[in-house]
Structure formats: structure tokens, C-alpha cells
Image (cartoon, rainbow, N blue to C red):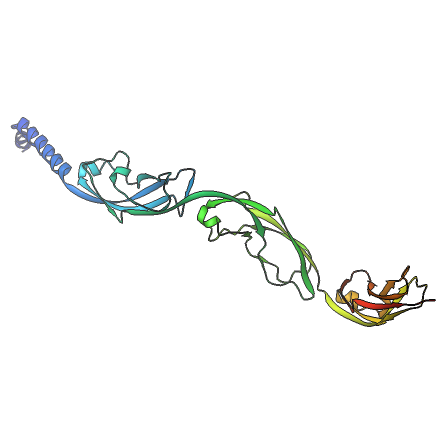
Length: 306
């Protein structure tokens, strides 16, 4: 039995080897010429000149279908294809490019390429640089009885580079919102610059220091019938009216301790000759208060002889 099998195998062995070889060649040819389709992503890199800026990302992604012989498609990596589009340095506005195989490096012309939504639209504008003031964006209110007296920002101005049409609409830049709800003492914050709705921009600094000075809330209080003193009077002098009303501002704690006698209204009448005059009333008020109004501010003086 073994001799019979051996005899069958070795009989006309060279014809059998030739037949197997030819079958392999024919199979390779058929497989190599078979047309297949595969899907790939295309990464489109937009190269922008130094004098221009574009809206959106410089990297765009497109879907594509490749068709061709199996042997050629097998040589294409499974990684996304790479394409490059150069933005002209002398054109601005809305530009439109049709992506094709010419933008893909070392593309084999025997492979057919179909790009789904092959058009790329790009908004292009001149690059511009400006210096703008920074303004704080505060949200909320301090604790009851307190107010924000003063806010300072460091640095006060920043350099911003962006698209010309976007920057010409700006007269300042804002910080990101800063919540001051319930604060009752002076505080400092480090706040990023808000670049929303600015398009692509570059900033000289990304953050600024915002110092918020908090003080007690101030109220106004009026003191009526404060008599007018005539300083250095040497002649017979009368003043009409003889009293004024003084309105001052301060914190509730300070104002609660102030009495009428703590305020003084006066006019210096030294060296005035006999006659009639209109004079401004001078006032002295306690420390930690602010003069809001004196009424009347001007009074009539009648200077007579001794």
C-alpha cells in the first residue's frame, strides 16, 4: 500500500510541480487585478502665511473612498491620508478650495479617489495687533452693608493680535466673570482674559491680576440749622440767612456718633469794607466723612460801619 502511494506521488512529479506553480501565478495575477474599495480619512493641513489668519482650525478632516487593484491598495497605510493646501498671501475673505489628489503627496494615479464633500471653505483676514484696556467683569454683589470702592487691574493694558475685522470692533477686553457675591473684605483674583467671539487671537498675557477694594456701604445724612460763624469780624456785619443745612456722607457707624456741634459753617470777613457781598459758606466736617452739599452755598453779607 505504501509503495502504491509513493508511486502515485513521484509519478510525473515535475508536471505536478509545474502545475502548482502555474496555479499560484494565476491566482496572484487574478488577486492583484481584482478591484477593491476602501474608506480612509484625509487630514488636510492648511498652511497660512505670516501676514494672515484664518477662522477655525488649520487641520480639517475629510472622508474619502479609494478604489483600485488589490495589490496597490494593500500598499496604502490604514492611517489617515495627508494633504496640504497653501493659503495665498495676497487673498482675504471667504476662500473656497476643491480638495483632490493633487494636494496629496506621492499619490498613485492608478488608484481612484472619491472625496465626499470635497470643498473646503476658509475665512481669511489680515493679521492686526492692537493695545487695549482690560476691564473687570464682576458678577454678584458684596455682603450686606459693604460696597466695592475701587478696582485695579495689573496689567491695565494688553497687546492683542487677531483678525483685522474682529479687532476693529473692540474698544476693550474683559476678564472672565469674577464672582464677588458675599465678599466683605478686599480681595485679589487672577482672572483669564475672555476671548469668546474674538476669533483666533494671541495675547501678550493670558491672565491679569484683579484687585478689589471693599469698604462699608456709605449713606447720606443731613444736619439742619447749623449757624454761620463770622470769623475775624471787626465791623457791624449781618449774614442772611444765618444758618445752613449740611449734607455729608459716611458709613452708618461713623454717622451715628456725629452731632450738630461736630459740624461748623463759617465765613472769613476780615478786611471787608462796608457794603453788600455774596460769599460762599465754608464748612468743616468730621473725619471719615465726605461733604455732599451745603445749602445755601452762597449767602448775603451786609457790612456796616462801626
